[in-house]
Length: 276
Ligand code: GLN
Image (tube, rainbow, N blue to C red; front, top):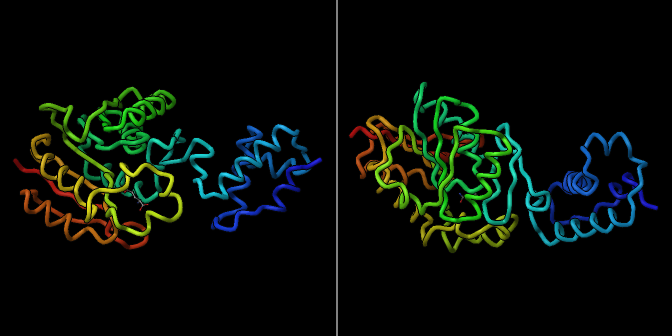
């Protein structure tokens, strides 16, 4: 017989930077229990079916599959979100974009747009923090829109809505007080696409042309037609992209163009205000 403690004492995940945590999380999934349960009942034994399920998840993890996809969920902001391989796994980095949106967005009622919403992470975090805001999330991938809607229902956020749209294509003349986006921004030749979790994530959520800026160029070009006077556009980008993104915003006629640092000191969000 094999108990929880036995399994956690012999974790073999050579390529993971967090092998023990990964194993604990996969075990909570198989047992349907919390991490504190694992600590409280280390001698609890697994039946054959549970053991097989655990071994199978560990084998997939050994191949590099992200823990979030194996669990089917990932924490973002204050929300537990369902994730699937149809969308990017929400990253802690993107919470910086949420913070800035909360700082720069209007204090009262407002319409807010999240372009390329994926699992709905940014849109739902904003809807949760600001009940006066009506938040629209859009994504070109139908499964992403369905997933975001499931997450919306799970968190009962009546002030968020999701539609399928390739950037602004389905938004006609809708206008917003604030537009945010974590678009794909990796160059298609970037070697980091061959390593780690991103190998399992959809390229459409990660990669955007030879310099990584195709989606950002399109968003900056089209956003003014959908922004109210004094509305902000805020975009997450790579650590080395603040100069070109700032330049694109200036060229398009945005005011108050600036970039903000993440916790590691990299400029990872840029934005501007539309005074049209
Ligand atoms: N920050 C992610 C990464 O480098 C990419 C996210 C994105 O392209 N929007 O793994």
